[in-house]
Image (cartoon, rainbow, N blue to C red):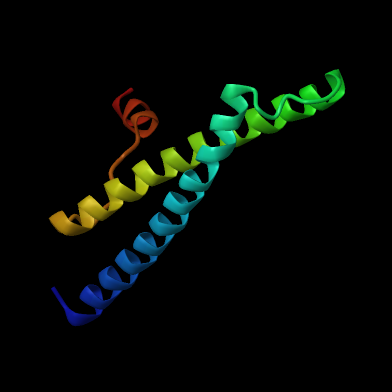
Length: 100
């Protein structure tokens, strides 16, 4: 493997690790909001307030789910880098298109 290829892999690996840290921080920061929404501790006020609180809680859950999907993809990419893979793994959708 030539040195430029190693440098590129190291650079990509560092970018992925940085993004992973940001996402983990985001997921951790969402926990208190999710716990408050589940316990109903923020449910003070009229129906409009409750509706807004419910919508915000739903958005936080969706953000956390999106972050977890991205974290999974990052972990897969880091694993492939460690294993020395050069091409990205195909997604299930890509496999089904090429197998038809």
